[in-house]
Image 1: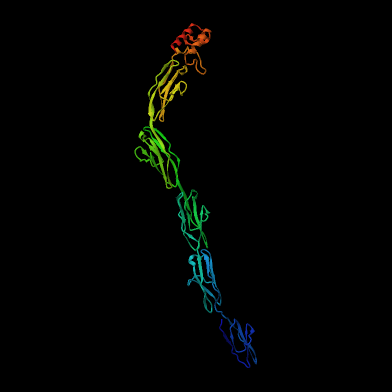
Image 2 (image 1 turned 45 degrees about the vertical axis):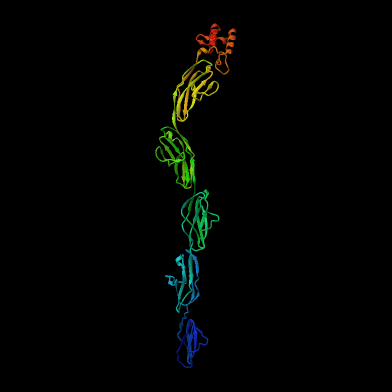
Length: 486
């Protein structure tokens, strides 16, 4: 293209004339023996003379056009993983293409379009194409491929434990194409205002425990971080306090505390009277939940507690009292008593034991209480004043403490039968007689005897008791007993 081709014909004859044709069509003005051609097609020439006309053989002319770029490849910006392509448009004859990246030929890149199905950061650069035609070679302008990358994040630590009230910070470093935006999440839910590369909680609370992560966004997408599990620790809590312990000398005593803490581990230190105990001698387990004292002695009796420690705090248990002692033993037995009605009597017993003993008197197996004629029912001496007929029975004293009970020998209170018959006045709610022989009985008997009333029938064949007859035997028995002052 742009060049001319001269066509000519040689003919003989008289009076010759010429007419050049292109594809069978006469070319205006082309009437000489030669013609300068510059268009594609088939050329021939008609030569006319005096004796006739003749047409030359045809000749074909192919005009090759120069190679020219009509559309330059455009620069492109894409994210890694996306496709990218460059296209050139050109005119010319017999075109062939070769794409270059940074002036290095790309194998197999031999068409008007060069495509990359999934770009990587390594594909960034300047791309050109060289177009070669029949007539010449041209090179395109450079087209830049800019590759943006999605955020790549540094890893968060997987977990941490922070005590209540302490600070907590998480940070992430993002690489890739800036700018970045951040959103921190707890248990998958966005945290309000947590939109920086670092998440800071100045004073954690128990409710802050959970799984934390961050999502980082840029032009190429969102990248989630790994998860960090936060455990909010608290001071230890004692759910089971040590209980007071009572043991005999030579026995085994234990104290146990139950505690929990987040996080652990938990450590223990048992104390006596506020002083740390050694894991030696009678003590074992001083650094465990259970303290053992073996053997217990009077010397080790006292108050014990346990200091419970964990990473987030210290707590001390309630104090627990250890009492060490001996079971009661009776050292003095009560003596039996023979008493007349209305007399005052005392039973006395004694016992040893530690700690302090308590006492309880029983009559016929039933506990006594103070009142009426009874006093000292919970002491070592029981007094009955005055004695009544109903007080007759078996008496025992029981001494008690935390280590056991001891019962005295039984001691009988016997009422002198010679003093029972003359007591004929009865008080409602009491056994026959009122336990007191006095003028009331004398007047009542004399009146009953004078009236031959059965109330005066007090002398039976075997002692007190009616025999069906009010007679002199009754009178004599009454006078004798009354005179004795029973």
